[in-house]
Amino acid sequence: MTTKTTSFTKSGIVKLPNDKPVVYKIESGGGKNNYTGVAKKGRVQDRLLEHLPGAKDAIPGARVRIEQMPTIKAAEAKEKATIRRSQPKYNEKHK
Image (tube, rainbow, N blue to C red; front, top):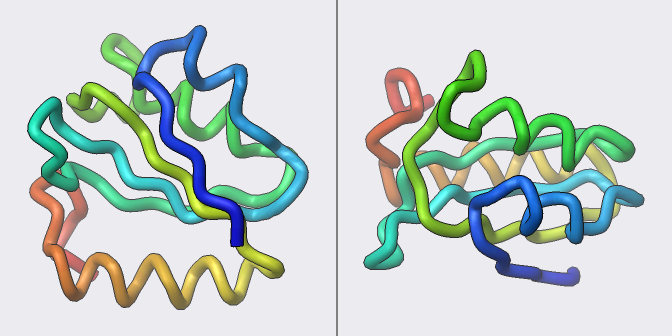
């Protein structure tokens, strides 16, 4: 699967591909995983924009890393495993 990393800004997010489901990690400046989530095909950029400061689901971070997945089910399984392993601070109850 394709992995891409960019700054966690509006200009960085709009450069990300939107053609497959993804698992994304919002990381601190030091590389710590603050939040892991999943976005459906066609909603990747919109979902990440919802996490920017001042947005409804704001999460602090310096960069975002995405991994494209073949299906939404595969993305959800990877998200669950990642949350269980790294226990990001901003994921509720660490799923």
